[in-house]
Image (cartoon, rainbow, N blue to C red):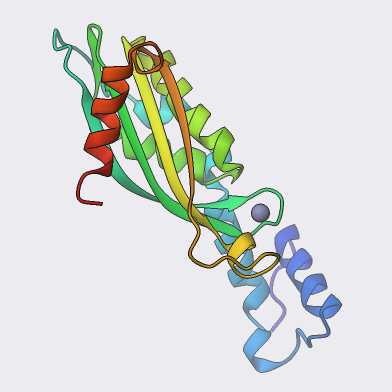
Length: 190
Ligand code: ZN
């Protein structure tokens, strides 16, 4: 069965198997390059998406000015240093100033950035900046808690550690009570 060789990711996978001493021709590995190519494309599908596309017509003009918090958004990403997964939760808040975002759009923005090769620190900033750019709100905050397989499976092997990063804009940066309110909401019943 000769699979089409048009996808370079399949070739990459075949070389990888050979390099580690495997036989890409054995039964269990025959379809692995094709599966790997499909999986890797899905895990990096965020490169072919844009913020405009993801948000569509999900921005609404509204007078509300109370904090909106979407917490525990599950995500899976890949660290760009090791090409190994990191995964966890993103917590996002903003204080509207005339515009709000359809609630389902926030997880979609998180997924778009997660499905690229990432650094947790950069992804946190990108999510906050994206919402800032879309809504020009009074403030935006993004906190990400994640576990990195590159730390858990190899290297220092610290299985239970979790890494937290935050990006704060506007009122969340300037105004300590606003920041505490957000932190209390996301840390409650965790
Ligand atoms: Zn890593």
